[in-house]
Image (cartoon, rainbow, N blue to C red; front, side):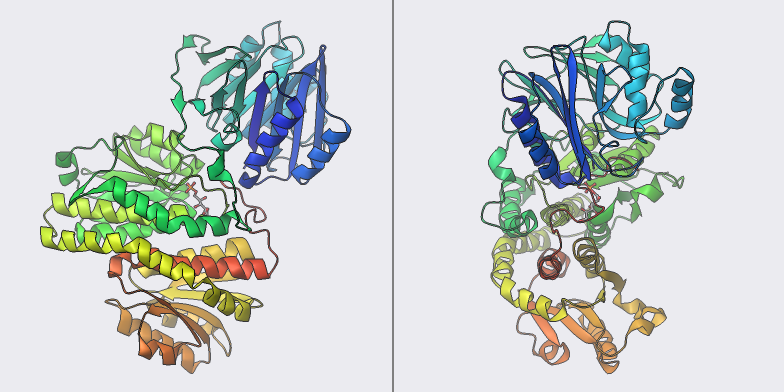
Length: 608
Ligand code: F6R
């Protein structure tokens, strides 16, 4: 989704803004722009298309000054174009605004402003903000921003500069992330941490309803009523090196290969002997958790698939009834939340608009909230009663990979912990499972070493127009995730199904040569999967099987077989996911897709 950067200090404004925008590129965008103030004049450069276009524009016509804001836009109101790119400027060329989010009442406001003789140059909702600030400006930028936001309906993070007050950037957050970076004799703003890391690791995260005044040597914060508030700064634990591609051609591939180390790191952080330690942000007492009546998991996309796996885990190990819902449905469907439920929000970014709204719906009903989050200090982490961090490091590739396997890992551990509290598994069983968990990194590495095998299979199927992915039990959601990976980065249609559903409709799609990926690892549903594969074979489908090492039966059934090491059934989604991620990755590369920045997608979806 859109990205915001801003800088005030002595460094070259062009390179700082540009470097920040490059750091946010992964979020998805279709145009970009920057603005600065120099000698009482606004300077604005903006252009449709790739960031390289803006960089070329700036090398021909650099900005001057030492204060500036920049933006990568992902079109919502108005098509991608030079005019619709941000910054947006008022009539008098005094005020420039960059904005993430959506202004829902922009049409009404625009009508009002047109009557007051404002003229508009774009079709964006953002331009309304610039004109309204200009209309409200009586010599005090902070006051005019506060007056303006009192009229806005929607979600927004804004950064504003003004020619009459060239010593400050005024920012406001309501529903869209915004972070301040504290430097020495320089300060920065950004919508996401990576854009700050080249300059500082000291950050202050804005909360909804807060305004910031960012000067070169000072930052001040206020509530929406204009009263001063105190905010603490925090240190980011990772550095710019974690957001480099290293020797990998794409972030996605790098992130797939990071997975064994992420799981190893999580094991050493969270398993102490036969006890579990979910970190200092996990604040629920054992007593509270032992008395839960049920769990409701709500999440979006890949995180929803992880949540679905969580349902199998909580029900199987801890015998806790678990519902799984897509956040955009959960938030609007008036769910029954009686008893003593726990609502879980699962999210890599911690900023997904629907997941956040679902969390707030539950919170308003005084329900306990536990979130599984990757980005430290993100809004969802801050608004939850307890948080378990994924510790997966920054995920830059738009397609989520390492966050997914880490989410499954946390859910597995949590379900074991709950089973201990509820006495549903005995300690020897738990010890056995802990032993299995500790074997995971080695097994994951073994799979990654066989990447070429997957690449060869991908090569055979690179021209397919359609894939079906089937699994049963805990690997049904894994099949859904495999299908999503294929769709989002290769743009090839793919559907995930519970294999037992084939006869109820989908098998009608199968004809000679139809590619089907079947997850048939050794498990309680193995024999059922064999029957499904036979069914497909008799209809001459091409079945790519993910099986367990040394399974000779599978060898004779699949047209292609990829073996993973033997493992406990409920842990298998972590291993099965790796070949599915690699398969989608190689199919996409062979089709020359932009793997890290798939079309129409954004890394974090901060608007509905
Ligand atoms: C798919 C993908 C998305 C996200 C979804 C939720 O690869 O990345 O489906 O999983 O947008 O995002 P988070 O986890 O940040 O809430």
